[in-house]
Amino acid sequence: MPDQRQLEAIATELIATFDITTPPVPIESMLQYPKQDMWQEVNISQLSGSFINVKEYYSPRMSLARLLARHIATSDWGKRRGLAEILENEKILHAFARMLIMPAAMVRALSSGARTPTTMSMHFEVPEDDARLRLEELADQL
Image (cartoon, rainbow, N blue to C red; front, side, top):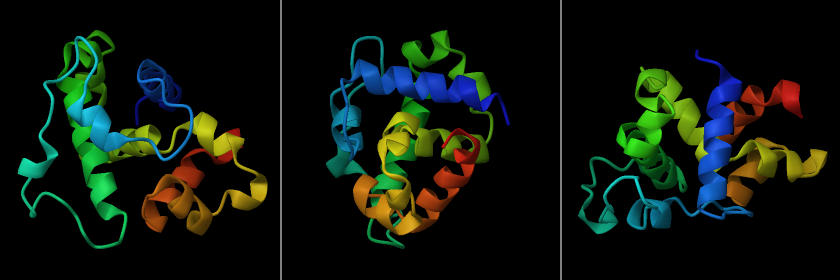
C-alpha cells in the first residue's frame, strides 16, 4: 500500500477544504457541491440501486464515499496530488474512502471508550466492519 501518511494528509486537506470539523462527514453534499478544480457535481438521485450497497444500514454512505474517492482521484485537484496513481486498486481506494468518511483527527478526538466499531458506526454513520478496519489502520496513531 502506498504511504498511508500521504493518503491521510490528502484526506485531511480535502476535509479542511470543505470546512468539515465534526462527524458525520457530509459525503453526499461533497459530491453534489464540489469546490473549484474538483469534479462535476453528482446528482445522487440518478445513481442506480445496483451501485449502492445496502447490506447494512450505513452501507450506502460507504458506497458514496468510494464514489467520492474516485471523483477526487480523477479531478484536477486529485491529479495534482498524484491520487490517480496512488489509488491504483480497489483495496487502496476503499482505504482512502474510509479516511474521508472517518478522518484520523476526528477518530483521535473520540474518547478511548468511544473507539469501538459499534460506537464509531453510529458516530460516523458507517458500517461496523468499516469502522473496525479504520481502527486497525489507525492503531499505531491512537
